[in-house]
Image (cartoon, rainbow over the protein chains, first blue to last red):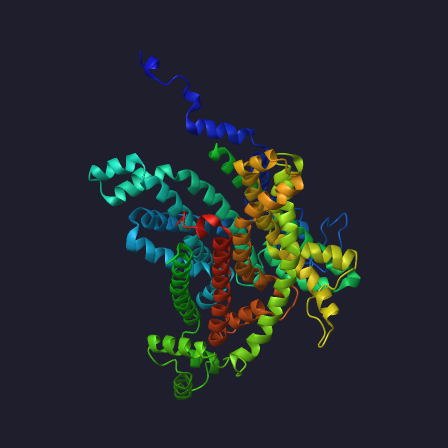
Length: 290
Length: 320
């Protein structure tokens, strides 16, 4: 008769409840659809695109037409095909960078929040100092020094975001460490790493998940910004920010409408991706807050 | 010592420690750049002896700690050294860029602060209704979209399709104040789009909290009209967290300036730092970035002080 001993309504475990709330949230579903579309494009975009995104032609800078719905760029490449296949690099770099930041920030945040005292003071001051320098400036300088590659890009953005994540995790840890189960574990002579990672971490996983989604949005933002500045994804990739970086100076040619199609469509693609990620983050936050 | 003074002294002390760590970070960052300064200035074909001579002249053959102390000591006395790239004093170039960036930031803040606060108050008053959702989700989305993307949307609409405003921020030499302002509107609007969401969100949260507070209900019960309650009780309390956000954003704005100034071809601090990084001009870079960091720290410090002066809980020492 083990079924009798079970809690009355199994489906209403906190996790199932969160999932149920998520599936009912319109913001979350819309976000998943948008991001899902771009993930699909990252894998298969080049296949479904009408033209090869890298092949050049003599039809340079032609406006939108039936043959090229989004027009062509300075090298005669089809903008629609480049937009469809432009998600790949940013969707590789940004999630990996977020992963680095979440791992690093969780370790630093848990340590400084749990240990308190001198270690916490030192870590917090260093974090304050690093946060006083705009992320883009740190990233640009480091990328100039190390040279830009996918790996350095992941590493640099990951490291730059670590203090920001650690601040969130620290705040959540400070609240947890005063609770009874932590006190009990400490009286039970558990070692600090065990208490931090096996006792506290599972209980701060909510804020960590929300932070990861929010951070992913910022990572996309930062990868795009760095690529626009010339320190991120390199040519001839059809990356959206790179397309904008290659064509934005044409906007000053107002007589030809600034060849707007070379930048407006990739811009709309970036905007939709970051908004999609933020809708997911918003939905998660709402569901976990209940 | 009164609690307020104690709070201010503590806060100032923390700011000094952070400032010191900041200068070390900036120094380390700038010194990541050139492996061999003399070599990177003179190029790969000059002989080792002239490279050594130049390194000695620049003082980069000294121990790192000595170099750091020398830099900070001179910086505090207003001497930032010579730019490696332009061979002129760093400050001669930074000064103009700093003033230009401040002009751009000033226009952006004059636009975004009232609009953001108004947006937040409207959202709070319509809490849970369509207007609230539109302002919250719209603001969040605008904040999340990279600056250069929103800036391009603005250029295409107002500069190209409507033809109302110039598409670059670089105004002609000796242009009048009005012409300068005209060139600054589009780039500041791009900054407004990035900042609006934060300010509106904080104002909204503060206003909702104040609207639900007991003192607001009491004020209504004493027979005060809505306008008076809003002005005297709700807004006064709701704006506290907003001040903190505005100050933090004022400092963080400089990252966005890097992108916006390049897009609009504007000679500001962001553009200066960008060029310095690109050409490995580390003397320019370290002083430029330190100024940015100091600006951020001063802004957050002022916010904290203002916050504590306005907040009776800190003023009378209940908190802390």
